[in-house]
Image (cartoon, rainbow, N blue to C red; front, top):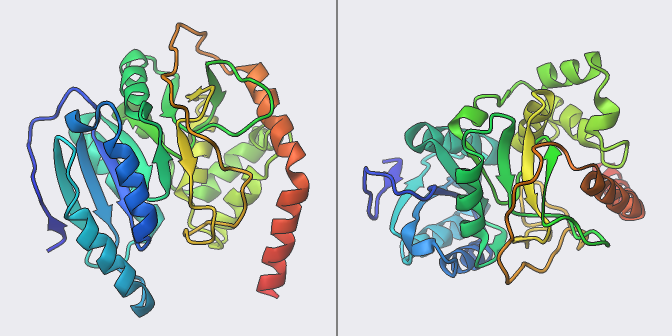
Length: 309
């Protein structure tokens, strides 16, 4: 069987269901779930855990350890576990999992097994999902924000979408285009590469090209490009509600380093009526942040090239 159900209720709650994608990192998974359990709305939320099958024999032990652990999880309104019998890989797992949940419930909060959340993450997500449910230009809500030097606005919009603790609706997920080559061609024909790459500060287009070439299997770059080309926006908090603990070479696309590590907020985000448009102030601060990290990014690229050679 492809599915192991602990408890399932067909009637959705008012809160968005949580889709959590896990694989072969038991300690990361424990930390992710323990933090989620401490969230204000955890016991009122449905949790769907998608467990991918081992890719090879070396992964068997850790996958089995993860699966044994997730069957002991409590603290949520109800839990449903989907155990894949074949290895799908992260990209296929997320695309199919998100599609399934939004088609059933109309909205979803998406987590991976290396994202430690603030106790107010779920409250922020659910409140803003309700706020912007009928705002067609808003594609998603994001919980992580880069550790920029200066104070960001309390909440702000950026063009495109993101992938570290996020939420969306069925209406917005419809714009997702899985064909990377089609997305790149449109970016080039509309002369949007420079803007897409944050004025050259971050190589998003290179990531997309590598996905097309089969050098990565990133669903996230295609989600970002899809929303960006449709002129959609994502709402961000000014202080991070997510810490990515997977930048330790344990993830599918993980690299070692601390440039993305944050301290999660222990206070609620103050939500207000802000213009539904990209924040040029926040965008510039993030552009400046990535430019300040260029030596680190360059070193990583050199290490990757040396590894390939």
